[in-house]
Image 1 (tube, rainbow, N blue to C red):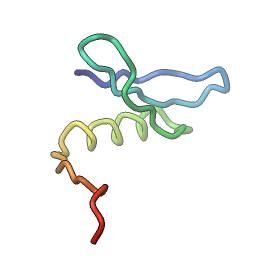
Image 2 (cartoon, helix red, strand yellow):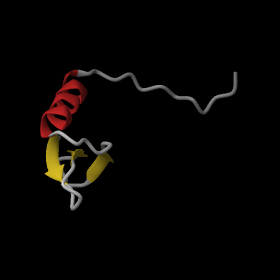
Image 3 (cartoon, helix red, strand yellow):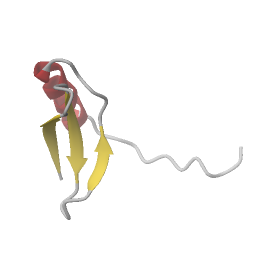
Image 4 (cartoon, rainbow, N blue to C red):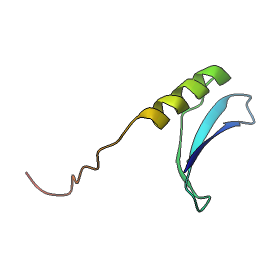
Length: 58
């Protein structure tokens, strides 16, 4: 998996989380500054996620 930083047609920056099969799993919000997009991408990279099954009734 990788995180690819992109530049939109409007000149703003965003990133895609891309799977090994090259499919986009998620797209970020738009950032005015490339550095902000990179910081957010790094935060996602460092985060470890818990899988939560929220389909069961409480």
